[in-house]
Image 1 (tube, rainbow, N blue to C red):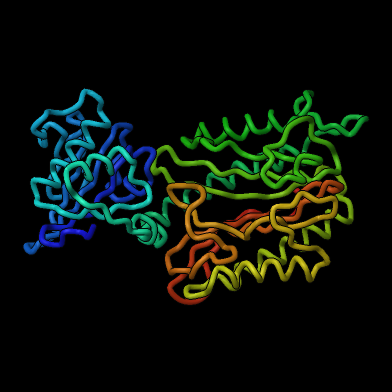
Image 2 (image 1 turned 180 degrees about the vertical axis):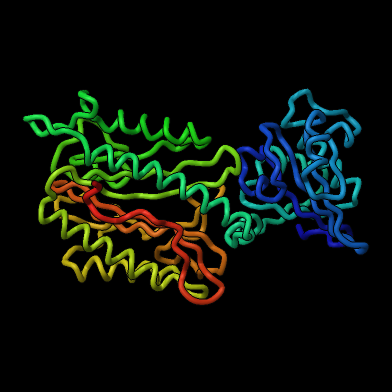
Amino acid sequence: MGIDMSGNRATVLAGIPSQNSALYHRVRFGTGDPAAWICIHNSEGDHTEFLVRDIEVQRAQQSVGVNRISSPGDHQPSGGLSGDRTTATAQALAECLRKHSVTCAVADRTLPYVYAWHIQKAGIAIEYDADLGVTDRRRKDAQEIEWLAAAQAITEQAVLMACQTIYSARAASDGSLLHDGQPLTSQRLQFMIAQFLLERNYHCHHGLIVASHPYSADCHHRGQGVLQTGQAVIIDVFPQSATTQYHGDCTRTVVHGDAHDRLRDMHAAVLAAKRAAIGLAVAGASADRVHQAAKSEIVRNGFRFARGQIADDPVMPHGTGHGIGLEVHEPILLDDNGGTLMAGEVLTVEPGLYSRHYGGVRVEDMIVIAEAGPAQNLNRLPEGLQWP
């Protein structure tokens, strides 16, 4: 059945802003209750409306830039509203669209089915826009870049604390590390990092990584057990600001004592791959080319790329990086078929090598793609294995 083009069209984002980053990015209003942003397109111009719980209306009026703030009670359908808050919001959204003679609603990838069901029940078609809530979030504005830079600065402080804690630990006779006279485990250091961040109003919703051999052969293992002298420890911290909601993401690798020659070779290859990738990360470049530059340096240094593998010999099993913002992993990916880089994008660059025999090495920076010229690196931390 074709779409009725005789009526108005609307663009819709809906869900819970504290959980739906596309909706939050559009309204910059935090709430744990269901809400919807609506833009009605008609011959007289666009009309925007933010539909939110009644007790949030006054607060929303102070900050959300729309033509009207309303609550579900302002859009009661003939059969009344459900007692379930999410259902009532979906019913009110559908009724609002109906009252504005909307025949087609354009939605993004995040629209919950309950909203889609009620919109369609009202006889309104839904059209999917793959770029809605994605393209506008990829290109960060000056305020977002400032927030990301602030988040990365705090993240670097946490990584520095963790690396120096490992480097300054005392090695027992069996090689295990002690901090303040007690065993220094991955879990203990994870707690120390999380506490450090919490005191600065950052939280680790997705956890964090303090991983050493043998667990670091798996690039995303969180780590466990007592840390050992001479072993590489991957410190990967990716917290979210409780104030701005934007993330930091930084990885460094630290070795207590002397590093094995093979670890040093792995580390040198990872740094070369990171430099090569950042050097090609400019507006208009393809993500494939940036990723290929990192892979080529890995191979040139005597290692190999093996997607998804956990191997005895050191391999790079993953892409080179990803977008970051309200979510720690956002489009685009610095990987095969990743797309074209846009000015204003903020990306991580994080090549790594991992081995069952030697453990893992990863180094990660955050960069901003410039309008012209080289990317801006938001990191200031050293990159070495030793952290005096």
